[in-house]
Image (cartoon, rainbow, N blue to C red; front, side, top):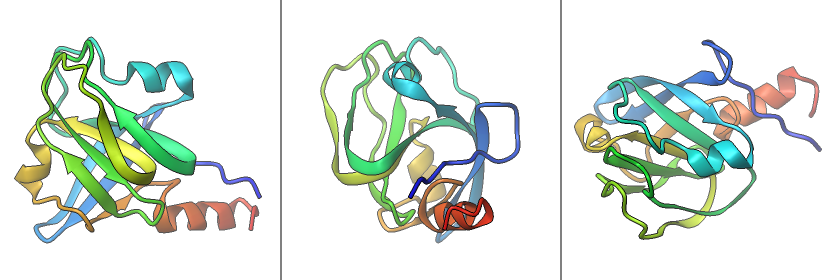
Length: 149
């Protein structure tokens, strides 16, 4: 069985992601890190990130992942997302330029990077739902549409 993550909506390499929290739905345009090079680079060397933007890293099959802040100028919230499309854990306001390893704490289907403080601002917590093609129920729906199931 082959499952292919599909992006929705915007320019090539971006998609729309929704965080579903107790405070409501929060929508972001996220860049999709494709390939080993883009995943390794992430948001390195960026001096700013618009408030409604982020970057997502998809893993199929899900796996334990780790990140760091090497060459990253801005603090980030790193959100580890399960295969079911729920938040596993959040590393909030990471320290720019740190080479400390940030582990997922379990298998993840995706990692989301947002501006530091964003998770707290919208009330995001472990167990909250993340809607994005390629993870959780969106993965199942996209696979059914493409005839892969």
